[in-house]
Length: 279
Ligand code: SF4
Image (tube, rainbow, N blue to C red; front, side):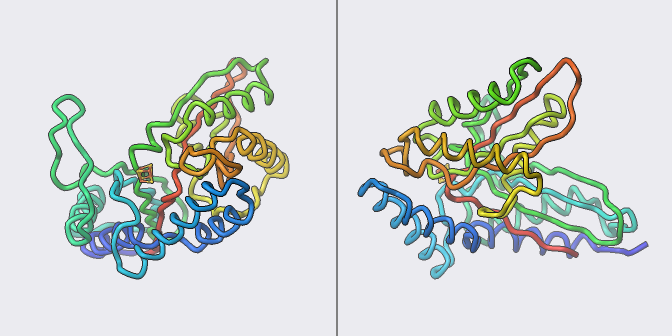
């Protein structure tokens, strides 16, 4: 059994919170360049140029990419041969979020749903655990802003709705979302599982490298068709009109109940932030 101290977890989560909020991934910089080349509207081109300049300034000056530094969404893969020592993993992750959001001068966005009183330190984090083989601990920190998270939905389609029903739901939802999720976006789509699993699939789909191929050829075709369709809506960068409403559509799928066809959509804004570490 390999031991990992809570202090290592705290320091790692803290570092990842700051890194994710300051430094956009290389895949997103490539996506911005491709979007600039593909965009036909002068306003859209200008918006994309500003988004890239903003991300470069954030990286060079080590400041947040966006004022909304998000709820701290944490994906944890814990090896079954790992033992956390010195406290609980939950406490360590929340401690890392608390420290990272303070040290990085990141906005604290967690609040009581009724009173709207801020919790003051951006905790509790949203933590998703998955037990895996091995003796390592993988931590992915994916801060998620409210504007794009608000453009999420789960719908329980009828099995007879099929792929056509899925496509019309996704396209119509991106149209309705308009400029709210700060496009260009990545559209995360979860198909199958059940009510809650489909939502997780949609969110996990957002972690895939932008520009990468879906390992399932059938889903790759669906992604290509959906991307073409949403980029024909005319929403455009920041909703100001144009060709590039989305950088990508990412789909994850699992088997579902014979009576159901769960579909979840989780939209990610251009500030697509996630960083990971393996302890
Ligand atoms: S949706 Fe994204 S880019 Fe827009 S304000 Fe929220 S975090 Fe920032």
